[in-house]
Image: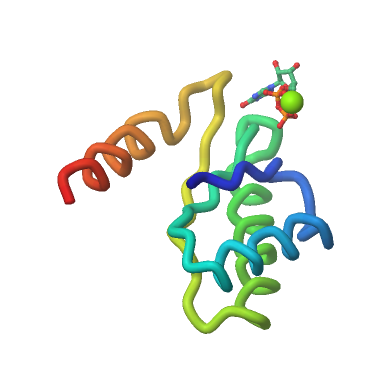
Length: 89
Ligand SMILES: Nc1nc2c(ncn2[C@@H]2O[C@H](COP(=O)(O)OP(=O)(O)O)[C@@H](O)[C@H]2O)c(=O)[nH]1
Ligand SMILES: [Mg+2]
């Protein structure tokens, strides 16, 4: 399962609740931060770090995190590889 989060957003209650629910129900998932092109590289990195830091407060182990943009193709290869690797197991 992929949870898509707009990279510009700080953790929203509804998303954190959903992520927590996935964890509690042992549903494997990764987070994809979308629309990375809307931020500069530095801001994008900072937002991902801030977001995952918030999750770290409630999660011992973070899910895999991917960053994407449908506009400039960021993360496309990585996401395909990620899915291919899951399909192998
Ligand atoms: N700049 C940019 N715009 C995007 C990207 N992905 C979707 N959009 C635009 O955002 C709007 C909403 O798209 P949608 O796929 O529904 O994303 P949502 O905002 O997560 O619901 C549309 O106008 C899309 O063209 C992206 O990676 N970069
Ligand atoms: Mg939409």
